[in-house]
Length: 386
Image (cartoon, rainbow, N blue to C red; front, top):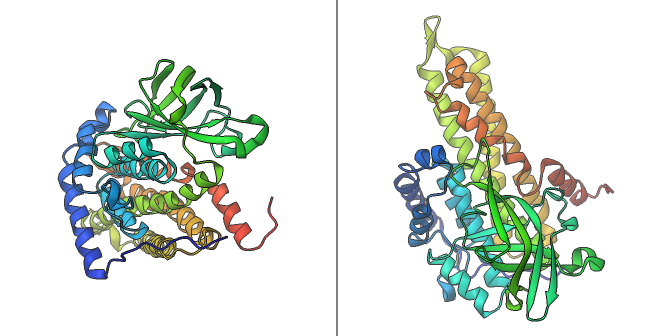
């Protein structure tokens, strides 16, 4: 496999710290005041997307030619970590834009690159429409089909668990154009969500509510032939690997916030005449949580550095899957520890512990489940797992 191109202008440590500070201030200013209301209303605040675009957080890795920052996965991970410290669900909306935008500008034609430019400018919200009711991790068996009809394609099928699916202007949709070719017959389409024959319905969930999840139904939806992108199965998988680094960074941010609160609570909450953190059962559990956070930090940024180095994709999969697997399992452990530390009060809405724990439960099943990551790691270790 040929070597991928390294990012053109690596930042030094001072630059990265300044970038992290900028992301932190942005998150506190733009996410902090709005996420709770958006969560209760189960709606996505589009003003947040527009603010993220103005701050340069949409299209972080895109070329300057289309308005991007031309930075690397390392900086993208910094942004994701800092946003997720305030709220992991609005953070994921930025992640979705960056992944979808990458598909548009790396694998599209002139009109797709214009969509990517508008996306980066905060004018065109995009959703990635891949997952199906019977094909979650089993991407090779998506059943949504696209049939050529003159100068149009006709799309039929149902997608599920689509973040921002009912809010987006454009749906970057995976469909089967040649069923006999299997995974090699799958292609992406950039589809206007308002196209006749496309309907969306929100799925009521306990998590991700500021970035709602939708079903997207295609019923004889006719789209122009030039909606077709060049991206196929190989490009999908490559993109997923960079996305997995960002997923790890997302949950790294979330678990840091939970642990910081848990440590403070254990130091100040008193029972039997002393702080509960004086009890070994609490103190040791929080110490273990610290270990989980620090391991996630090192694994995530190591994977990002490897990605930015431009080594062949095959040589970075082990690092990516290891970081993603650990972070998505660790965030469940850490938030459960914090919930336990909070005791009975943790089950109330007066403390944030339960919400942190609920949000974390989605981590192990997104962008490749625990089992998918374990399989990838095992194969990279030379084991003949099928």
